[in-house]
Length: 65
Image (tube, rainbow, N blue to C red; front, top):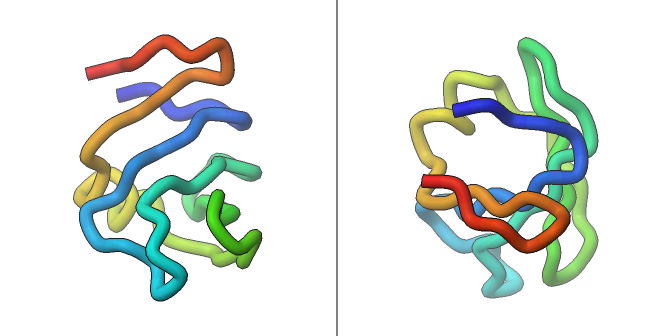
């Protein structure tokens, strides 16, 4: 799966605020993700994001996988 800045990923477990969707702000060995619910930002390893991704949406609204 190809991840790009601006994509929205749906992860396996929800954030404590209840949202499962995160916007990708940085891509590399680590990802910077911003919660779509509350705006909290976290750095997560690429391996963890790839393992826990349940869906990927491009900024134009198209679903991937």
